[in-house]
Image 1 (spheres, rainbow, N blue to C red):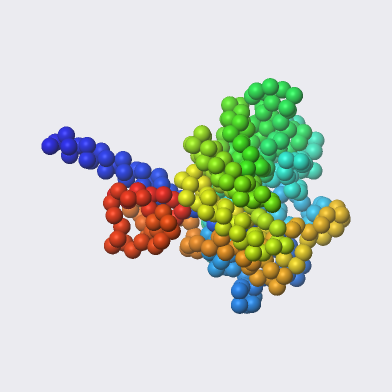
Image 2 (cartoon, rainbow, N blue to C red):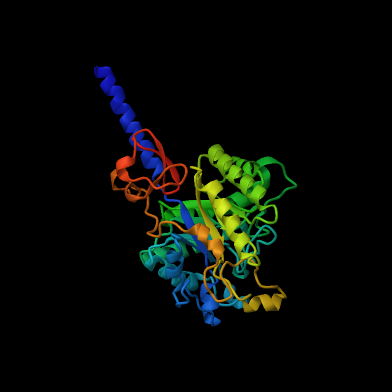
Length: 398
């Protein structure tokens, strides 16, 4: 009898810890709306479904989103203009924070967009040695995050680099594919880790994300080699932009989210997604399908739509100088209202709470409960040892 009681106590303690781990984070339904202040300065306004002008962060919350992603550039004003620098990020972050929205900060470590095809070194860092670039990465990261923290805004997630499949801050941190094994990642890892350490120096609880593109591809090899070279990360971030074969691409991405999470023991987040604005109904189907395949995965931490607020084929003035067309995957109608694609992001708009050391104090305890078919379950009908969906996670009730 005594042994039985001990086993029961141990099992109960283990169950509590399991529940605590599963309830640590609510599934993020978010959007990167970094263009919003530039659009507003250009005369664009945003409206709810009834045509009433609505502040964008409040509108995102009304839609059902609980998180916002904002990109940071080092010194864009010389070429692009005064957008996405520290001051602009702070202005947008304040608005998101006022709405109770969680925040993801995306450091590009560039004066313009960074992606697999371009990781341009900031102009102010052009002549820096490798050691000086490392210091600049750390200083820039701490500077922006400390400014946010000083205003009581603590991002829950921070990206150290944007789509860094080819490395970052070229040529200093470019991956050298002519070398083999860990040697090819040496400089990239040094810069990425400088960002990682700087994030945790300011925000010890934040999840640091290493982000690459091509969500449908098998990316285990990349993170395995990055980690073997000493690279650090708390979360994996993927870009996933489905095209004509979207059902298959969504399935592959979901499978990759699961395999990456299982292999490395960290959450995986789709930090960028979107679909062509030319077919609003199809865009809704694509996004709904993506959610259906990912939000029940314990490895998936959330999904962010990239720049949904764009409408009317608006584009930055700098795009005209470059000869670029407008971005074609916004998700608002031509009247500046949320389009059908964003219906997939509907959820609990009350925001995302930080993990609690005591599961009894977690906001998840008050979250709606659903069965695996998505049907709402009243508290009185919850059975012990059954699996339910709570906050986008599979949870075993005890």
